[in-house]
Length: 119
Image 1 (cartoon, rainbow, N blue to C red):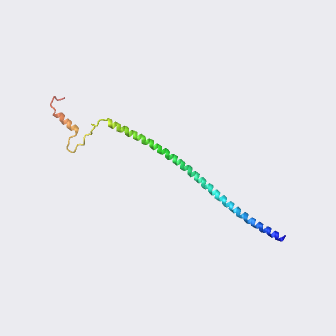
Image 2: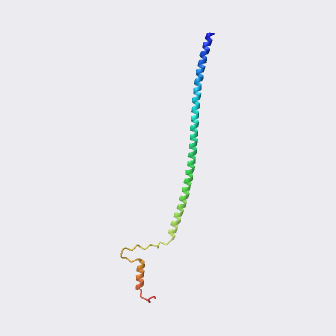
Image 3: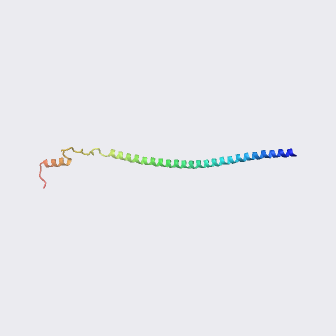
């Protein structure tokens, strides 16, 4: 009987040690699970932020394409107007020192024209 009690006590000690190890393992697994859940939540937030950023960038790209199309259309219209306008619109060169301006040349030419004087 005494031998059976000793053997049962040893079995209980082994069972208790096994239970303690199992409890430790379970606790470690819970900690790992909590960490994994926290990482998953962080990754989910990052993924949502990345999706929002992608959507914003796509919208901005579309806006820029629209603006570019408007600018290109305006430039084409401007070029078309230039092509339709006469090319004889030249600006008189700036006279150098001592040269007559176009108005002075016209005035001088008017004075030289013979004819009745206007009063």
